[in-house]
Image 1 (tube, rainbow, N blue to C red):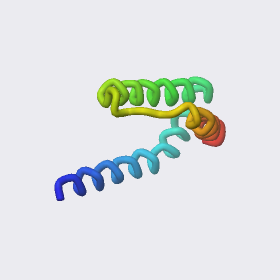
Image 2 (tube, one colour):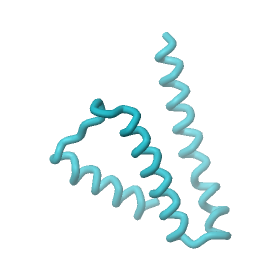
Image 3 (tube, rainbow, N blue to C red):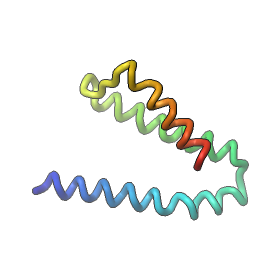
Image 4 (cartoon, rainbow, N blue to C red):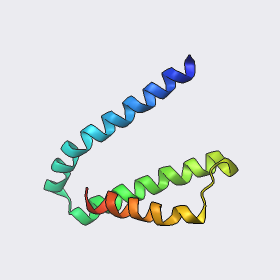
Length: 81
């Protein structure tokens, strides 16, 4: 049962961050350039993913066939946002 609570907490956190992003970006665009905002977003995400990979170690695997999908998701995530 404890794992379900953690899962719900993580999902709730994701939705709260995702939902507040639009308001934060609207405010940030008044002070910062779009290039700087994207740079900080991508840099922060890279740091978080890098730390996650370090923490998970060999448990985090991906295959060569997944690289085009990751590239497409990254392109869509940056350009459409």
